[in-house]
Image (cartoon, rainbow, N blue to C red):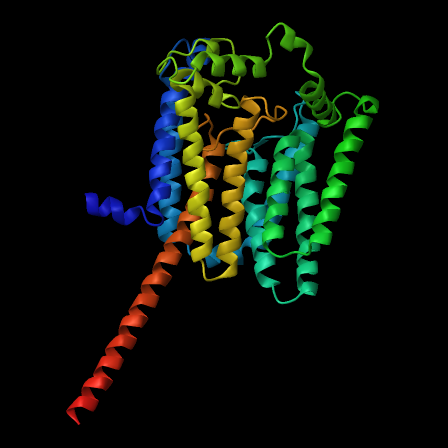
Length: 405
């Protein structure tokens, strides 16, 4: 049994260990943080949401095992353009669905009837694959890198622009990760610098024109409000009724060692304690020691991502792994920074820990691709070792023949 399981869990062993610890943390804190939600929605069945989380995580592990054992890396490059078309189609459908909906909600989710998901989660993966393909094919000259920049930036503007209608923070995070990927991919800095300048001007334009935009006009009012709250403070924070104030209180109550598993009191007053502010509940229950351990896990994940990239002998897998590890770790760092008040509230879940459905599944795809690249590296290393052994055997045979003569 042990042999068969180890045979299935291919790729970087340390990443699998990190995933095991993140899963354990997720199960414990989701069970603790969803008590209020259970009494409100499912008649007090406190096991409902942790069972739901467990089901999605088990499916996620199945997705990872499938990707690392069955899907070859070259498939992602071959279908990169098709994935971009499908993503764009889904995003347009989500916007259209929002327009015709009587509820007038922002187009974060797309309901396909049998399945609903957030296209923004899909965009995190597809844009990385597409950008990795473009960058890997255009490393020959500065002119090719210039062409790569324009292709990637046009795709990012279109996709992130649509995402920004319903989720500005996700759009900015994706754009930032792709920007770093292009920097690593040797795109001339003058183009990247112009992109930064354009981004600053765009945020400034959104901020200063928000008051003149009609109500319900995308997320411009939310963006301005969160920037104002971060700079000047939130009026509701004086009464301590904001989610961020509750998060700070939870961290304060946790101290260094925490109150113990399931002992969170602040979670009874927070709306998003199981999602956007789950880190604060972890610190309340397991203390700063637990928070630093969680941070350590993501730093280990980042380090193993670097190791995977350095061992890749082909550009496409290296760029793809770089983009995915940046996306996962950036999101985790942003989540933690929001919880401790270091940046404006963004609404980013903690990867593989926060309660989720399709977000868990898309995260599992990212991990599955990372593990696939790692496994490919291991296979390449084994082939190189076999070649070295063959060379040594040939040299020994030649030297033996010379001695016999």
